[in-house]
Image 1 (cartoon, rainbow, N blue to C red):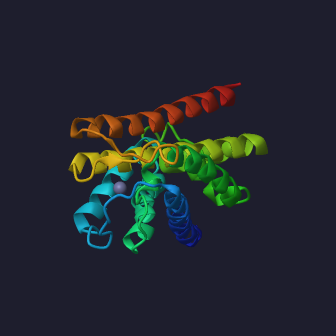
Image 2 (tube, rainbow, N blue to C red):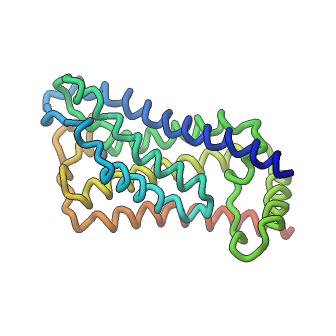
Length: 242
Ligand SMILES: [Zn+2]
């Protein structure tokens, strides 16, 4: 039993890295849109800005918005996604004279959230081992882990394939959106370069966000995760009682 559990942990962690890397790759690809901008921002010293503080801060802010999932792995995932979004600086840092923060735009947040939701359904379509992640567990604190596991397994088995895909899709859409918000929140929080091309690629001029909005933005990230999970979990409980 123990062997089984250890065995199933490694691929899960690997999958977390895969998903966050996929998100980083999307941010990198999206940064190519920066080529069509006339406005060039100052060159980012990406590798110089990779301080432990910057990495730790982004991870922490991302981790915190993932906490309402009550799932450690989902929190780690949103922490890592909040980090990998900065892959949009790479082209600019490599010397290309283009808008260097395309991943910080609202259009990227919307597009990548839908894409990550879709990609996740492809990842998890057949992997029942992930049921613990894809199903919200509202009773986690109240009962023993074995009871929860059983309840979650029962809940998962009672879902139709369409319901499973629906939950996976929206769970990752929400997590991506929250990771994006947490990233912006930390950038604003430290106050360094709180200018974002929010409206890119429609308008490449930078929008400044004052520091006082940092924590409210982080709060919105926490709230959307919390709301989605509590609503979905409640719906599941009601349908289980029928
Ligand atoms: Zn950033």
